[in-house]
Image (cartoon, rainbow, N blue to C red; front, side, top):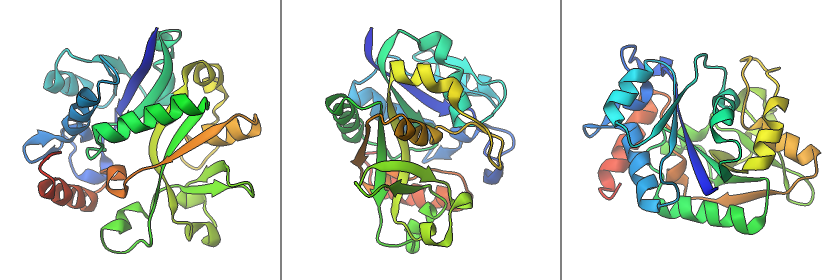
Length: 254
């Protein structure tokens, strides 16, 4: 059994990116598809031999662009991040001890962060390890994070939930500890609970972030690791693409 299996979510169309003809993860930064930056960091981390890439919209273009070094699983309907991970269950159950979920449109992750995340998860013996960032404000390039989920902690300082921006109260919108999106799961717990996710939200989608509330209600241990703010940058809009392109151009090691 593998210690860690990585799942990369790459099924999205990127409606806000004005690129109807290609999947979002194949949009280029400096002549490289954005997903290749994440794949390079994964390879250098040596955490996982053969990541799984969840494909959807024009998935064959992703396969053609990336080749045979990866396993591909199709998400026929895009019903949210929780659903995307759920389509991997039959392929992965009893194959790995831990599941790390990453995103094909987040190109600024580093091998060190991935190794630190997995190490923290395994040592903490938690069912979920969540990456977070803390920012002073939402000014300048940090405005890209205003749409991020807010981290809700109880009076013991433990994470009890993530509240998405559209569901947040004015008071919660002022929270500056944010969900950085990368999640590491105890695989046994994940597959036992994957069907408990509900889609009773405005988007009618199954969200991975709902696992936090589920684990909290079960009194299971949730671990968090604070990561560098830039490593949480994702690309959902042309403005965010501009921010990330500028950052990558300034950091030629990425």
